[in-house]
Picture 1 (cartoon, rainbow, N blue to C red):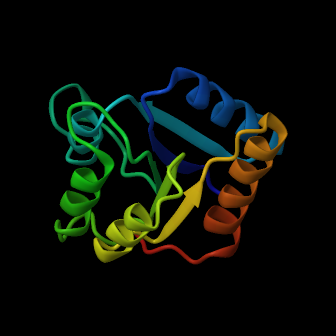
Picture 2 (picture 1 turned 90 degrees about the horizontal axis):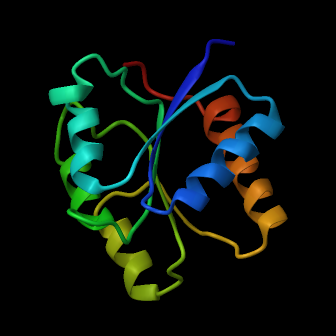
Picture 3 (picture 1 turned 30 degrees about the vertical axis):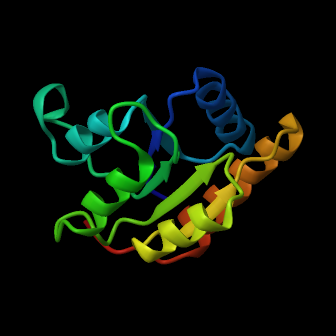
Amino acid sequence: MTERRILLVEDNAGDVRLTREALREADLAVQLVAVPDGEQALAFLRKEGAHHDARRPDLILLDLNLPRKNGLEVLEEIKGDPELRRTPVLMLTTSSSARDVSACYDRGVNCYVVKPLDLDDFTGLVQEINRFWLEVARLPPH
């Protein structure tokens, strides 16, 4: 299996570290790139500036509450861009608000997942997400 690429858009350094560890424990062939805000996420996806040689991710894990450009704004831009809209976007956030869930699905999110507070639950969730989206689901070609 070829190495898959994930873009993690997350401003919490602890959650980035936990995600990396969960992927390492699952022994998945995954390259994880993390960016801390919505503007950098879009620059990465559009190969702008320092990201001119970035490879398109197979999956985007997007936090809802981000600095500079929030997750809803990023999601709207991704799903509104013909070059990017087929890339699966999973909202991975602490919000369980019905309003936030609806707003994300209204904008085309592929999946909405609430981050568990327990460390082991978080690790298991990251591993399950990646197994499903990168091993089971058939993704569009780049």
